[in-house]
Length: 477
Image 1: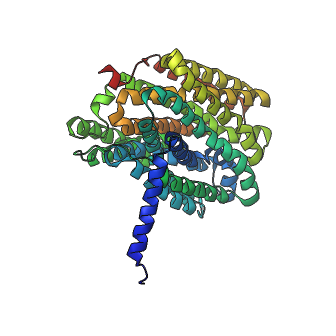
Image 2: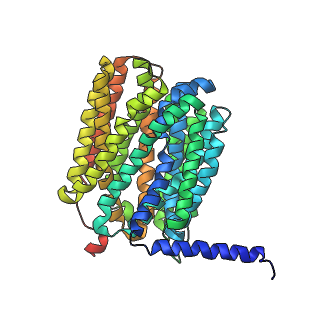
Image 3: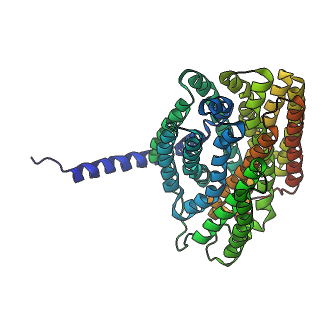
C-alpha cells in the first residue's frame, strides 16, 4: 500500500471539516448556536474595556506617562472603530459576513498578543488601536449574521440578548481581569483577551453562517478613503485641540482636513453607482435619528465611564481591583436592562423605550455627580448603576430601528454606521470630559462633569422623540 500524500491528507481534513459544519447546520438548535458563537466573538472584543479603564492610572505610572495621554489607550481604538466599521460593514455586505468575521477574529488574535508586548505608551496605543481596528468587523458582521438567521418577529428580543452579552463581557473582565492585573500585571489582560478571541475564531469556523452577497457591485474605494480622512481629521482635531491647544499645527491641519474629506465624501456618494453610505439611507430620519440619539448618549456614558477610575482613586484612594469591582454594577445593570428593553420594544414602541432610557440616564448622572462631590460612595455607585440601566435599556431598540429602516440588503452598512456614530460619540465624550478633568481632585469639578453627561442624555432624549415606530421595510412595500 502506498502512503497517502499531503494533498490527500488535506482533502481528508477538509471533507471532515465540511462534514462537521453540515451536521451542525442541520441541528434544530442551529440558530441558537449561531447566536452563542457570534456573541462570544463580539464579547471577546469588549472583554477588557472596563478593567482596562480601571487600570489606566496604574498603567500611566508604570509607563511614566500622564493621565491625558493614557486615555488614548481607550480613545484611539474608538477613533479607529469609527473610521473602520462602516467600511467593513459594506465589505461584509459585498463579500459575505462569515468571511469578514473570521478574518477579523484572526487578526484580532495576532494583534492582541502583540499588544501584550508593548514597550512604551506609544507602542501600547498603536498596537491596541490596530488590534481593535482589526476587531471592528466582528460587531457589524456578527449582528448581520444574527439578523440573517432570525426572522423579523424575533429580532428585537434577540438584539436584547446581544446587547446584554456585550455589556456582560466587561463585567466578566472586571471579575477575572482585576485580580489578574494585581498578580501578573496589565500585560496579562491582553494575553487573556487574545486567547478568548482565538477560541471565538475556532467556534466561528464551524458555526458562523454564510450570508447573501451582493453581486455585480464594486467596493467604493474613494468613498472609504474620504470618509476615513474626514472622520479621522474631525476626531483628531477635537481630541488634541483640547490638550495641545487649537492653534497647534497638527490640530489646524486635522481641522482643515475634516470638512474637506467629508465634503468630498458627500460628493462621491451622490455620484457613485455603489456608494459606501447610500444617500437614500442618510435622507431617512428613521435611519439617522436613532443613531444620532445614541451617539449623543454614548458621549456622556463613555465619558463618565472612563472618568470613574480616576475619580475613585482620587476621591476614595481605591486600588485597580477595588475600582473594577466598584464599577461592576454599571455593566451588570446595562445587561439586565438590555434584555428588558428588548421585551418592551414590541409592546410599548421604540420611541417610548428610547426616551425613557435616556431620561433615566440623565437623572442617574445627576445622582452620581452629587455622590462624587459629597464623597457619598453609595450614591455615586447607585447613580453609576442606574446610568448603566438607562443606557442598556435603549440599546436593542436603537439597533432594531436602524436595521429595519435600512432593510435586509444593507444590514451590514446599517450596523457599521451605527457602530461608527457610537464610537464617535464615545471618543468625543472621553476626550472632552477627561481633558476638563485634568489632574483635579475637586468634588465640584466632578459634579460639573457629571452634569455635562446628564445634559448629553437630555439632548439624546430630544433626538429620540423623532424616532418612529414601524414595521420592516419588506412588510411596508
